[in-house]
Length: 536
Image (tube, rainbow, N blue to C red; front, side, top):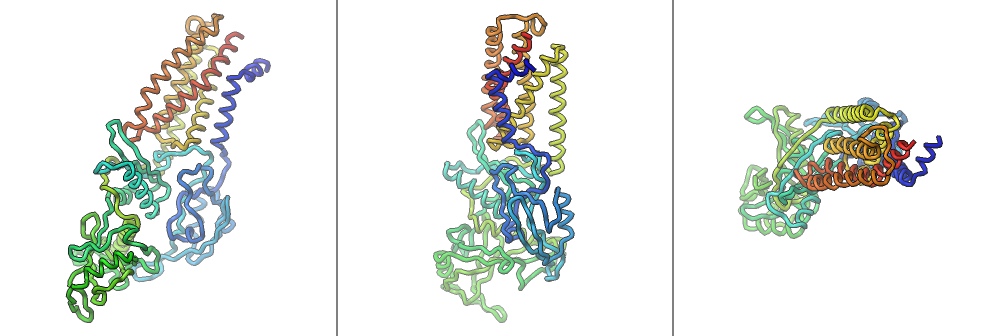
C-alpha cells in the first residue's frame, strides 16, 4: 500500500491518471444501455411527419435519440423493434417514446399499381442497437458504401466547396442521412471527394453521385429552363402531386416487359416561364384526335441524354405558365418491378431538379460496399486480434524479464494508452475503421518497444537484475532513443494523411495520436514507476 501511495503521488503519474479519467469521461462506456438509436429518418415518412428529426452527422454516438418504448412495449434491441413493426396494421396509432421526447404517428397503407391496398408502409426510421460508448465506428464496421470521386476538371477552392455542399444536399434529399462527405487529396496534388454512406446500396449511390446531374428542358434547340433553384422554384414530392401518372399508369410493352409512367409537378421562376412562352409563341398547332398540341415537344435532357419528350398543349402557346408537370417512365420484367423502377427514376429526377447540376462531371475512382453482417464480423475479429496482440506482448515481456513487477506495469501502461487514444479519437470525431484499428496495433507495438527501452536502460545489461544507480542519465539515454523513434514515425505518418485519397487517414491519425500520447504522457509516467519499482 505504501508503494502504491508513493507511485500515485508522483506528478507524472498524476498527469497520466487525469488524462485517463478524462478519456473515460469522453468515451462514456455504459454496457447496460438498452433500446435502438435512430440512424436516419426518411423524408415525408410517418416518422418525419410526426416530428422525428435526422440526427446530426457530427454528433457523438451517445447523443443520438434512442427509442425505449413503442406503444408502451419496451424495445431493448433491434430484434424487438422489427418484431413489433411486423405486427403493425395501416391507419394504426403509434406512440414512440425516446430518451428525449414522445411522438405520435399514424401508419400509412401501401398500394399496388391498381390502387389496391397491399400492406403497411414502413414508418421511415433506420435504427441500430443503441451505442454503449462514444467510439465512432467507421464504415468498415457498421456496413455501407464508400466512394472516391475525382472531378473531371480542376476546380477552384470555391467550386470544390460548392461541389461538396451539392453532393451532401443530394444525398440528404434522396433519403441517405448517415453520411460523410469530405475532401481528400493525394501526394500528387489531385483533389478527390470521399463519400461514405452507412447502410446504402452500391448501385443507388453510384447512380446518384457519378452523374453531373445537368438537367435541361428544351423546346427545339432553345433551352427554356435548367435544374436548380434559379429556374425551378418548387418540386412536388408528396403523394398529392407526384406518383404514377393516372392517365397512363402501367402497361405491358411489345417486348414483354412492363412500363410504368410517373408524373410530378414543378413550379418555374417567372424568367424561366417567360423563356418557355417565347419559345412556343410561333409554333404551329397540330390536332390530335380530340386534343391539339404544339408542333414541337418539351424535351428533357439529363447529362445531355434525352430522358423524355413531353407534348405541349395548344392552350400553352405563348403563355407564361409557372406550373407545369414533368413525367418519365420505368421498366421491369413485372408490373411491380416497373412501378418500383419508375418511383426510383422519379426520385432521382426530383433530386437533380432541386439541387441543380454539379460544377463538373465526377469519375468514380474507387467504390466498395460492406454489409452490416460483415461489419459485425470485422468488429469481433478486431477485438480478438487486439487481445491476441496484448497477450503475445505480455508473454514476451514475461519471458524477457521474468519479473511480474516489471511486466505488469508495462501491460497496464499499454492498456491505459489505448484508452487515452480511444478517448482522443472520440473527442475529435475520428472514425475507428479497419485502417484505424491497424494504427491501434502499431501503437501497442510502439508502446511496448519504448517501455522495454526504458526498462533496459534502467537495468544493467538489458534486463538483468543488477541495478545501475545513475538513474537520471539512464532515463535520459532511453528518452533520446524514444524521441528519435517518435520523430521518425511522424515523418513517415504525416504524408499518409493525404496518401491514397485519404483512405489511409485513419491509420495515420490513430498512429500519430497514440505515439504522441505515449511520448508526452505515458512514457514519462512509466519511467518514474519503473525506476521506483526497480529500486525497490
